[in-house]
Amino acid sequence: MFLTRRTRGTRRRARFAAWRRTRPFWAGALLVLAGAEIAAVPLAPVSVLVGLGLGGVAALGIGAALVAAGLFLWFLPHTRHYVGMHAVILSVLSFAVTNLGGFLAGMLLGIAGGAMGFAWSPGQQPPAQASEQPAPEPPRLPDPDPGAAAHPPHKTLAVALPFVLLAATAVPAPGPRPPAPAPGSVSVPRTPPTVTTTRFTPDGFTLARVAEVPTADGPRRAMVLSMRAASLRDYRLRTRDGGGAELALDADELRLGGRVTLYLTRLTGCVQGILCLTFTPDRLPVPPVAPPFVFMTDVTAEQALVASGTIGAAGLALRPGRSPAPPPAPPPP
Image 1 (cartoon, one colour):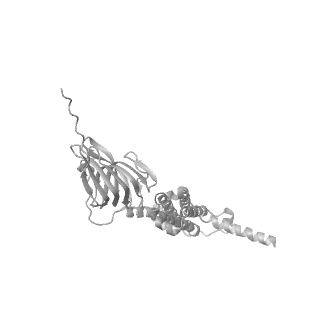
Image 2 (cartoon, one colour):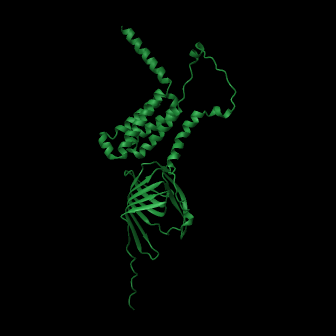
Image 3 (cartoon, helix red, strand yellow):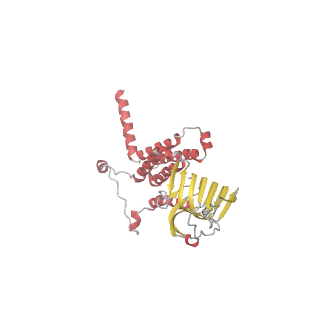
């Protein structure tokens, strides 16, 4: 009886080992752990997570998606390229839209699992087994396109599809939109106005690059942020006119629509209200593409130029600021 049980256990372990070697098992295990860690870190009921907004819901959604990706690698190993690429994208996205990707642990596990799943390839049959059971070689047909064999269509589609989806999401919705003016067509002030806002929320993907804008002192480098739309809460702008008097523009909320382009010489704020950073033309965000659902709080920026199709404001107020103090009178002789 004891030998029979031991033999059955040995056979089960052998069958499991054979099953494990035919699929990216450890890659799927890492993705399952990553998804469970990202979803379990908040340790709160579903009602509380929903009350937290996008951060709580995103933790559950991305965690469940990574667990599903791990199960796909276990039971559908032929989808490893498509699933592995999307698992890496979701893991990187979790840093911005969840609790820092499960405090980095879940994000790193997801990146490692997705990369391992994408790179895994089925092993060859052992030589002993191959000699005992030789498989008949199928007839070979002439290949009209030699380059097609090096890049199978399904693999090319699996790799290209995430980038196609990314580009399609980043493209603004169709409709008549006025083109954004070129930086050289408008001269910006010598000293850029200072803008503060308690919350800066772009709509869709945000693309960052560097360009030169003309000023009275010559061209000046500026960050160029392009997005579909944007919302700024508690907007405050401070600038000076030609005589040096300070002007103030306040709004409870400023909404920019159409093709929005911001030219900034400096940007300081807290990403997701947690990680406070400062960006300049010499220090762009890495990578220079911000995914959706990313916002910034306590923002202070030097605004060189703004271009947008539409501008809407709630509680707009324009008032003069403090005038420059007059020079002191010369002492009497």
